[in-house]
Amino acid sequence: MRSTGWTHVGQNVPPGVVLLVRVAVLLLPAALLIVGCLNHTGAPAIMLAMGAGFQLVVCALTFVTRRAWRMPLGPSVIVLYVIALGWICLGAAEWNNWFTYLSQAVLLVVPLIVFAFQTLRDSGAPALRRARLLADRVARRQDWPTDFGACRSLPEVKALRESLHLDAAPALVLLHHPRVQVRVAALAALEFRQNWRPGQAEMILQLAQQTREPAVRAAAISALGNLHDRLLVELLAEFFSDNSWEVRRATADALLWDTEHRWSWIRHAVRRSLANPLFHDDGPLHFDSQLLAPEALKDLTAWASEKGVLGVRAASTLGVHYNRALSERVDDTLLQDLRTQLSNPHAAPALRIELGRLLRQNQELDHNVLEKLLNSANPAPLRLMAVETLLGEGDHADAVLALRDLARLPNREIALATADVVQRRLGIDLGLAVGQPLPPVHSRLAAEVTRRVMMWAAQEARPQQVESRAPEVAHT
Image (cartoon, rainbow, N blue to C red; front, side):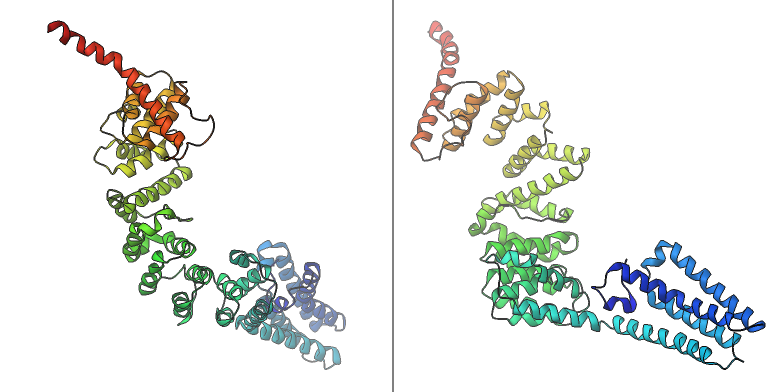
């Protein structure tokens, strides 16, 4: 049951006690009218009896309606008590005894008290006081976890977050605390806040721009994740190029959840971050909520065709998006579009490789597409992927020919991957450990495996070469 009105003050009162108090308060006007009816005779008694019956009917409707139990208590109390006061004044106006005066006083004072508490609660003063007490408790805490990320899950921080629904000021006071954990906890209590008063969001953004602690910057960015001001969002997007991976990840989480409205504001900052070679190990951009907007997909597809880090990371980001789209709902139109991009020789190679892995993982690669990928015009990783998939289904002469062709390529990384397929699918021992990762590219074992797989390709190709040259020798 939701505590409302003056019962909100006693948050630690057991629910059973709150229920009994609520019932008693609602039935008190009817009880006063019944007692007044018993103490009077004639027309006044009839009038008071009618009032008591009306009160009981209204209370009965309140008790049997489930929705009424979730409604605020204050308006019901005020209406019932004022109506009961009217019945007393009309029915017992000629009776000047102590009970009449007491009933009128009770029916007048109780709704005034309830109205006062309701007004106080609606003003936000109790919630603001509770938020300040919780903020003071967070500031005085001494036992903090060493992991800054664990600060947001502390009970005090969760309670502070719930108490800041009206004003963020109690948490903003903690932003200048000397302890880093306190600042992180205060910002965690404001995570993805929607309602900011003038100047508050600018204060947090300024803190993120000036502080040296990556954890504080990341927490400040998460607090501003629901901004809708273009200037502030563009300034926030500059953290896509922050020196800390933690801050870059927080920026992606804070801004990429709403690319439908923000993409035109942040696209240039996203491109700079994706193209920065220092961030190559970051991999794809991470977004944990909504899928990317069509405008963002169009830009990322164009960037995937560019060389260097930008193309690789843009393609991997598209792979994350399409993987989430397929995991949420298998769409035949989307699958057909992905297969079309995969088979298109003019599409970006990095994107085609990413889509091939995705469709293979979801078992959505059909036989015709796989056979098209065997062609030497396709990137080597795609050809190898198609070879392994086809050989996994059974014998396939064209797949074996493509595998021999791949084994002759002067690329040790491709040679190791080819040797792995040869050993697993064709049963030819090339020196790789079964069930173990491939050896490092520059290791001695990698060199030996490369030599063996190239010898295998040469031996398999020799009979065909002899047959092709035989007629020329006879003719000579």
